[in-house]
Length: 475
Image (tube, rainbow, N blue to C red; front, side, top):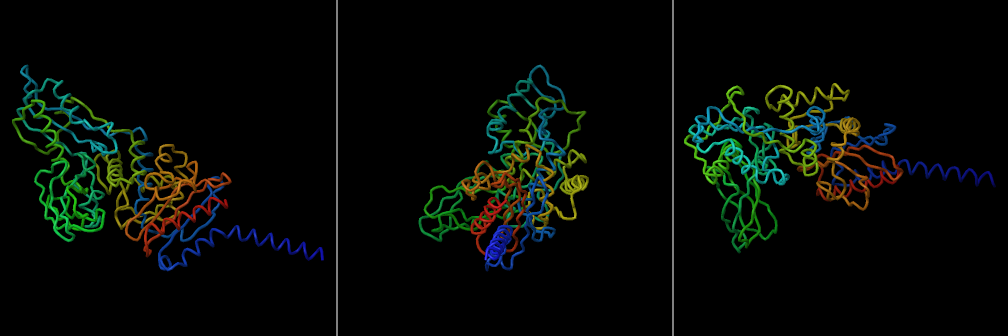
């Protein structure tokens, strides 16, 4: 009898142990049996940081659309190649001579430094009055009149405005703004509408901010009973014609949406001219766009950006596509001399290959993840997270639960920054990659990639949250 009880006890303990070991796999299996995810493409990889033990793996070496988790790769590469103290530099100067009357017999030159934070809403302490500072420095140099032109030198970057594989629906909207040598105000402008009280009627465009020289609108936006912004902006970055479609709430005296800015260099030049007028500086010539050789340039002032570590923190916390595209091109500037997307991608691939990562698990078309042509494996993200775990700037750039783009996760379930991760989402794509500290103190690295699922994003986020809680509790 005692032997039988002992054997039953052993069997019971083994069953409990087996259940505990299979709890997470069971939770994943149960999730994938739901109708919304039964036909989805799903990849998951979970690895212990200390032991490198594989805790769970599903399609870990398969390629998936990463959406904004691609930013982890761009940010990590930039921190390694450029360094966390790296700063972008915009130079203000002139060619020619300044005479005793304060006349510049030559051209005033702005050499674009491709600073993604110039005039940015994310860095107001740095840049809210940057144009005033520029004009102050110009005045301090003794310039009261410019007999030549205002020359905007954007030669630091090539002529590509946006990656070729971005979709038409994204290009005109604020998150579809491409990088520029003269990026300013996040390459974004606001369009303010007035909507009639009656639902289904045409709205009226009131104004834009900042002013966009030469902008043309075809407004098809209607008033709606839906109380949110459901308006979209369609247009190419190569021209200034914009079609406005969708709906905004009815009966609004002023309702504002955000759009990507065409031709940031012209906007910046126009804004600078306005500051000249306020300061009493007269320009006889025109605004021209061309390269100025260093030997012909006399520097007046250098505008420096925030440190790269600060830019990367905003990039990953707020998932700013524009910042990621700048970092990709800036890698090319430092490696090849000119900001070119394809050259930047080559440098990214070369760098991680040199570190021993499996770059056949990475197909890269842009720096932000906005392209649907990107493809990454969960295993590549794990390798990247392992490599970057000791980089303070990188780890600090990842939002914790309840913060940044991780705001949908309950911070009470992951106290003390137990969860730090980057999210990625686009239509029918939801991905996460990051670090999870388990209740035992064990540090886990994870990547969860869902492509082509049905149902809502918010429902899937809650399901992923449950999976992460299970991982946290049983490891």
